Length: 348
Ligand SMILES: [Zn+2]
Image (spheres, rainbow, N blue to C red):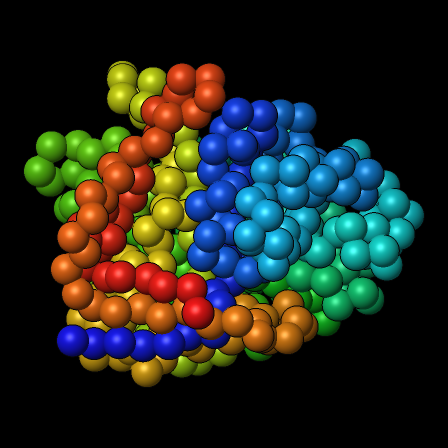
């Protein structure tokens, strides 16, 4: 039997949504994680310190009393409507922890995003001066670029230029999904990357080869086996540039199953078990704590947790829930049920 204790993990990329969906999902994140970097792609997007503070208060209303250590960090949405004085004030007060750049149209609720990263250099200068990270959804929206090449092309055509022009800017390549993305981070001291449980554990044949699986459809798309292997090598290396961001993104089954599936995977519930199994299979459990609990804290300049969890690899005899249903009647499928049956997780 294999047992490992970890400092409380952090989730540096999560979508908590709002209304009934928020109420249903936030407990899953609070159950496992300490810090959570909350994405701002609501309708309308979160673009001000006031909106970020209001959203954070809504989130905290739904956190169980027993999980008061859960600490949402708020990212605001990089758009024309961001007021730079408000951004500075929000950074100073702690209301704003990061700014997220979305290419317009790349993913869920990204219509307000940018056409070109270079359009926001003045905003990035504020971030660089404050030491606050720019979080980047690195995916080209050029329709002539193949879906599986979009991360590599975006990094080369857009983020590389911004990094060159502003070497003081600290960037996080979110949900890195390709070997090219890993290479980009390795080549840029100012860059780090979050990696998701699904990009670590699946490759595109899992998505497409045995009946198309809407539950594995996300953006950026799950890429080749060679890309997955590069992600696993980076995550299990202990290298401080790489850390966990689940990109947990719930969609109701009504939006997933049909002629067009929405992009997003809900893995706040079992993402930790999925990651543990990846590290276990690589015989790298000794590097798991760096990935889940240390490297991200270092990147965001916060102390590591003072609480711990214990993971034990043993058959879980309780029933493993495969979905939940919101108060509005929406069902959401849980990612990672196979791994959840293999790992027992205890709060210490
Ligand atoms: Zn995301």
